[in-house]
Amino acid sequence: MSATGAGAAAGVVLGLVLVLLAQQLGFLGLSDLLPAIEYLVVGAVVGGILFALFGWAMGRRYLARHPPAA
Image (cartoon, rainbow, N blue to C red; front, side, top):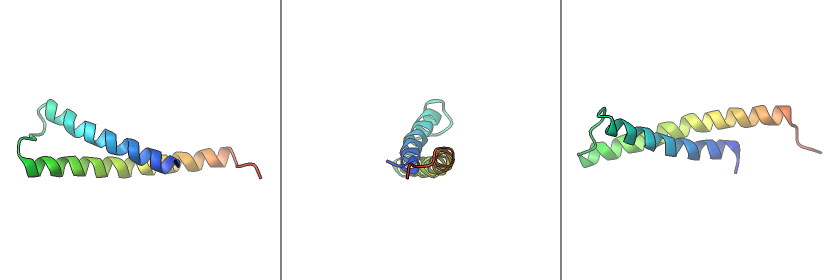
């Protein structure tokens, strides 16, 4: 699995967790079905994109410091 894929997977999970944490702290109401699904999907997508970018940058940095053996 690439650094980008690992970052995206972790970001999806963390995005969902943050939405559920916000609901538990009273910032979001997830009692209606459609808004709840929208919040969860947006949290997953935003988290996935942000962490995929972070993973991509970290992967490039790692490869710059540790070039593959030829």
